[in-house]
Length: 125
Image (tube, rainbow, N blue to C red; front, side, top):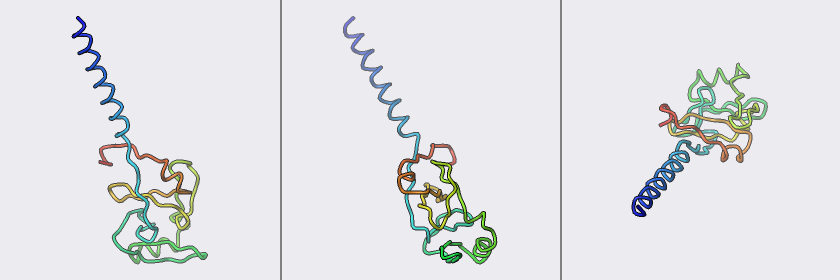
């Protein structure tokens, strides 16, 4: 009887350990990148420096002439929302985090970037 209880206790321990690990693995951290590597029109990471667009003494970046023109014309494209705080941020001043697929997330500060966890969904794997 004692062996059975020990065995059951061990199995329960393993299950709880697995559940705790599964919960901690169900989120992903973002990697911080330099703003000049991100097309701020389509919010995607690219290799190398992008085309600089300076407006009101702030630098935005686009991957092509079309993106550069959209950034110049549409002020809304130059804004984003911090996914942790929900506050609106200017992409030129934001701290940028990238997920595994190269999608950009804009934060008002580095603290929010480090605190944010991206849920693991099929599209984020």
